[in-house]
Image (cartoon, rainbow, N blue to C red; front, side, top):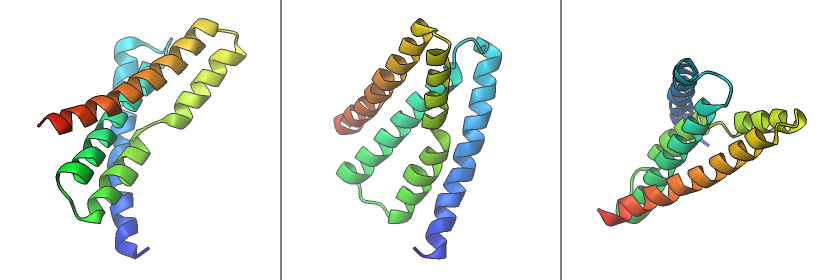
Amino acid sequence: MAIREYLWVSLGGIVGACARYFLSRFTAKITGTSFPWGTLLINITGSFVLGLFLVYTTERVFVDPKWRLLIAIGFCGAYTTFSSYAYESMVYFQQGNWGLFAGNVLANNILCLAAVLGAGALVRSI
């Protein structure tokens, strides 16, 4: 991989990581910290952005590969939070907090899949 490709991934990663940090803090201020709403929101919106971008750029228009490096790998890779989701779910599991554990697992999986499907349907409808 050429150095320019790493730079595209890095640039997207910087923006994605900063967006994740901002949105998680902002969401915690609004909703509190009893449930990881920020992680859920980030995973849903990241799934939507990734689905929108990949369906659009593979089915509607073909773009320079650097855009995939910037958006799909860089931005979405740094923005979405599967590791946070996994950790938060494990904590609920270890605490025996079955309702929050199940809610977090189901919400992240169902809503993120729905976001990708919805983004694909949106792109295909226009």
